[in-house]
Image (cartoon, rainbow, N blue to C red; front, side, top):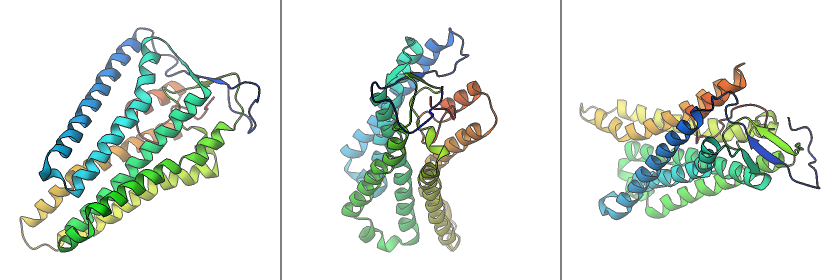
Length: 288
């Protein structure tokens, strides 16, 4: 059943049915539920430890760790928005989600994911200042500046998905609308000009800014005459580069699955495995 128009029924709101992987054998959902539950616990415990250690240890009260705890908080929020609903879907067969709950999940999922992309840009800027302008680093990256940058990233990400989510919610659905995914992802947005613009801003503009920062970093590092200076400079960026690589490779895998002429089951499987908490991941072009 597909969304067909822009004026929904005023009498009753539709109910969304999360199909997940339609041809998944009946014996596998409980195993998937256990796997996702363990991953969810690992994410919660790991990121909670990062938050506690960074806030408790005074020597870690630095800009890079301040942005790191923002990423940890976003990781907890992103998984909490999606995984708790996926567990009863796999374990109990609870496929249904109300109209408000679906679009609230869609909005929060993309807001937190956008925040992560913007925080990664801020971290790239932090590394750029630290390596290219080390003498100015204490002046440029003050605690007030860090707070402003982080707040700007969060607020922008909270506002950015609103137009696309609202527009999607105004489409007409049948009384029971099927979503071929494990949670309410923003599927219809990619078929509109607004969706295209938002995708460009959320995915490619932050990546462009990160690459631009590292282009300047690479230029500066290559000018270092010391043999120890280059490895030390690159080592300070390794963790950030790992996170950026993981983030955007997930989006790339999902985009390939989304664009390729694959059947619905393969799309749902690839996107669920590759990026359960990244923006732009969707199992099928049909939202309902």
